[in-house]
Structures are given as C-alpha cells and as structure tokens.
Image (cartoon, rainbow over all chains, first blue to last red):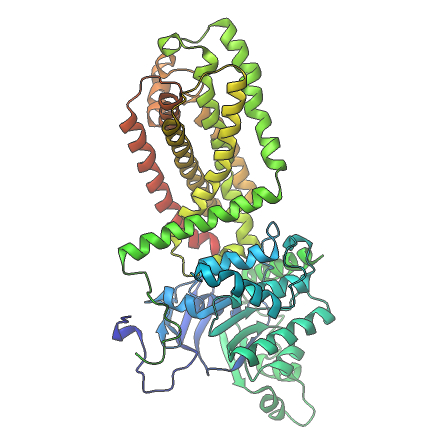
Length: 284
Length: 275
C-alpha cells in the first residue's frame, strides 16, 4: 500500500480523527463556512451545534468528501480528503439527515447493499450483515421492507448500514431529528453502545442542546459559518455561572443575532428547514 | 505508514486500472442486483408498463399491417418490422424518466450516502445506468413474447437474441444517463418530468422505430441520422428480424453515445447531490 507523503500527516505526531484547517466554503450567495478550524481526537464524541444555516451540514459535507473544500484542508485520520477521497470514504460511516434507507428493499438488503459497496468479501458478507442488524436490534424485522419500519427503526437500520464497513469515524447529521422522545433515547442508547464496543470516533450535528449536553465529550457552537466556542459541555456551562444551561451558553455566544440578521443566509435556512420537514414527514 | 493501516483495505484501487475495472463491474453488478430485488418486491410496475407496448403492437401494428401503408425492407410483414421499434421505444420510455428516481434519491439522502462509499462518481452512474437497463430488459422480453404471440417470427439464434438484449441494455443506459444529466441541470423533479415528456415523442417519431428513414422528408432524415434511437432500432431489427443494417456503425454510435452521456452525468452528479 503506497500513500504519497504529501497526503498523509507525519506519523510521529498524534493523528487526529478529523483535522480541519482554515476550512471555508463559498456558495454563490453567501459564505457558508468561514475559516473553520477544528480537531477531533480519536475516540471522542464530538458535537457540532448551531441553528439552521449555521454551516454545520456544509462542514460535514466537506469532511465526508461530498464537497471539495473551498479553501483550507480536511484530514481524516491523517488522510487528505481532497487528495485521497476513496481512502477517506473507507474510514467513514455516514448517516445523513434525511431518512435514507431504501423503503423498497428489506432491512437485510439495505445493509447488504452497503456491504457490497464497501467490498466486504462474499464469504463473510452474510454474517457481517446479520451481525450489524442484530447489533441494532433489528434481527426480527430484517426480512421486512424498510418502508414498514418506524422512524426509530429506520435510524437504527441506517446505523447498521454505516457499521458494515467497520468505520473508524461515524458521522451523524442530525441523528434524531423528527423522532419522538422515546425513539430518540433508544437511538442514543445504540449509538453509545456502538461507541464503547468499537471505540469509534463520532462526529455529529444537532440542534437539540439536551442531547449534546448528555452525550458529547466536546462540542463546538457554530453560527453563521464560524465556530464561536469549543469545549466540554460542562466547562462551557461552568463558564457562564452555576446554573447555566447549554441553551444559555448558546445564546451567549451567538448573541441576539438569530432573528435580525440582514446578512443571514436565508437560502440555507429555507433548505435546512425543508429538509427537516421532509424527514419529519417520512416519519409520519 | 503506521497509523492508517486499518483504514486501508488490501488495495485502494484508485490507481490500478485492473482493480478499477473490477470495481466498476462490481458496482454495476451491485446496483443491478438492487434493481432486481426491487422488481421482485413490487411487480405491479412491470405489468402496467407492458400495457402500452402491447397496445402499440395490437392496435397500431395490426392496423398498419392491414393497410400496407409503410414499405418494409424485403417486404417483411409490418408487425415484424415494428416489433423491434416498440422494444426500443418501451425501453426509452422507462429510461428517459430515470433521472426522476435520481432526484428522489437525492431528496431521500440515498444518493449522498452512496457517494460516501468508495465508489467513483463514474462507476456510480454506470451502475445506475445499467440498473435502469434491467427494467428495460424485462420489458424487452415482454414485447418479444407479445409479438411472438401475434405471429412475428424472430430469429431462433440464441446468440443473436442475447446480443439484441445487450443492445437494448446499452440503449437504456444511454437514455437514462441523458435523463440523469438533465436531472443534474434542472435539479427539480417536476421540471424534469416536463422535459422528459417534451423529448420522448420527438425522439421516438424522428427515429426509424415506426417507419424507415427513407420515407421521411429530408430534414427529418437528417434528425433521424443523429438520433441514437435509430441506431438502436436498426441494430435490434438486424439481429431479431434480419433486416440489412451496418451493425458495426450501430454499435459504435450507441457505445460512443453511452460513454459520452455517462461522462456528462458523472460530471453533473455533484451539482445534483449538493443542492
């Protein structure tokens, strides 16, 4: 296996799971991501928080090689996402915001599709598919069409899909958007179990502050394309006083600019809102 | 290198042409497998889609056979002349709306997820293109059976039949990539629907699917000459009915057009995915 020296970070430094340096992305109408620097340690559960249109999804898209970085660089476990996108994709399990399991395939087929796309050898494929489904508590529903699943089950199916390649980095874009509180906590239970079982690094976006508080080791607050503050939820809360909540932290760092911002990326807001609504609708 | 060992599979494929083509075949196989599973789960579409070609053959075909209005090469019955044209047409009608499925997959997040697998854009498009061919093949076989029941005698040479089905699949791949390219340009489902409606009939009527090019007015003959559907129809006819055609030219045009449209759709795919 040869990897050109330029695309891999020096081996002697501790390699971050994700390293974004001066990352920016310019859409025609607005600067979606504005010189973002972030570093995620291996094994960390890291949350990217912010309102709709903050630039979270665009950042995630650059990290997952869906968008080429406008300027700056992204490395995933030391591998440059621009130079070696195929290697980066092999390291990543990705669950997009929309419910993306194929309703016209069964649970098994949905997972097998990804096993094939990640070149899981044929002789272990069936076993790996069954393991992934059983790890997500879907063994009984495995033979049914995904169209008959509940929202929470579809999320778990998607997690099973993303697990099949044994990713080192799990990327979750709004994993619990549109789910009812019980389904939300079940999904989180499974994510936590996965993390302890496979020592995965998890990068997620959310705008549920309570979830970020409960599950993330470290969070970054993002607003209008920039990261305003980064730290552990406890440290961020403590910084504002004894009984501050993450909501207070959020308000403190984003100011009262949420509503009256003439330069706010309206288009991004619209699109985000539409996507969330679409997801919610599919959840019924 | 020490740290990235678990990331790297035995071979990262991108650089090695043999591995890259194996991966391409694997992706085509995988996406065709998905399409076949879907057909198995829901067959209604197969049945409903068989109605239109059946009507073309039964009504249009029978009537025009009776009036002898259209001169056919070597005086073969018009129904036999028409059948390969209807095969190509029904495949076209499926493929030309394939872009709508791609837009739907984009909306559902399926597309972005596929794009985060180690599958190059071009392999993804090629796989999708041939997956759309799976439906066309089933359709083509249905038309063959209906035509045979109506008394059309096709070649009995299995190699020619197989080759004809390959031509049909390549034709579908071309039109579905055309559709996916349009999807990348217009991005919205309803707009693509309108464009699909607007171009299918001109493509159909300006080809030699219903009548030979030589009875067309001059300007239409020119269009027919640049219409890939004509080459698909002529190749199918040559193989199934034995009408004279320059097979190498038909194949060359179809394969060339398909490669061009795959390239085009692959280049436009990120535009679609990142909306």
